[in-house]
Image (tube, rainbow, N blue to C red; front, side):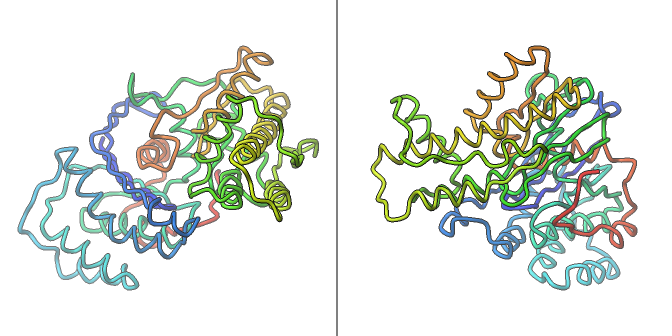
Length: 392
């Protein structure tokens, strides 16, 4: 089967076409087309993502990304057959609040032959609701005209599956042993998930305030570094380690390190950095040392909480996903710790290109959830964008 997958939960507009051979979780997944547009440069000047601005950019780019993915998959064929008046009326009603998207969608559909797509998978949450609605409504419109079932996907399950997907070698999900602990770390999420089997999820820990990626960005802003802040802090921290710089003059707290549960908190760490910088003009050396100290604290907390979860649940596998999982120092710390304490533990990180938001992971999750696919009419009525959607 062929899956068309759509991701618009934050500031990436992504569309993929993935060919699936076999049954989940043993199938082979071949990416036929993959298109992604990042809004990072647009939001960088503001130091973060503005939901309504993200929505406007998704509206501009979703159809071009759809065309590119279908073109790459050699599935884009032009036709002069127009949508029926009933279909056009339905799409305009569906996209009543987004006239620009309705116009570009209809222009695309009126000149495009129905491709050989068997299933549409779309992120329905969690994420920024204005951004999510662009993808959800695009999926509904395509499903209506092309008469293709739609499956709503949880963005976080996508990150879990992406972390165990080998896109370059065998194009399959790794065969993992349960119980499994998944640590999902990004700009919007920090949570520990217990998996007792495929598709069976239980959230056992989460941040009580800022997500870890959000903390990286806010601390970077306090230090005068550009957005996104995580990579900038990591570059400086690496230089500090290379130079073996002494600690910065202010001690940073290890939030909730000994709280006795699996929850996180990063707002206090951010506040501690703010206090440490009051009335201070950082030298280059001090900026490097502070970046290193901050990254050390984050790594210590994440590793300690994850280790506690693994011990408590006797986990056989650790999956780490989300945008922050691309941090090389964090990867090093996880491998160093668990190679010593749990040498038999299987550890998985996403391959390059699959740690940040993408639509390939939405296709993987869509295949896993294809039993929950909805007919076009049911999808129109039932699928909603849910910014706080939980993994279940």
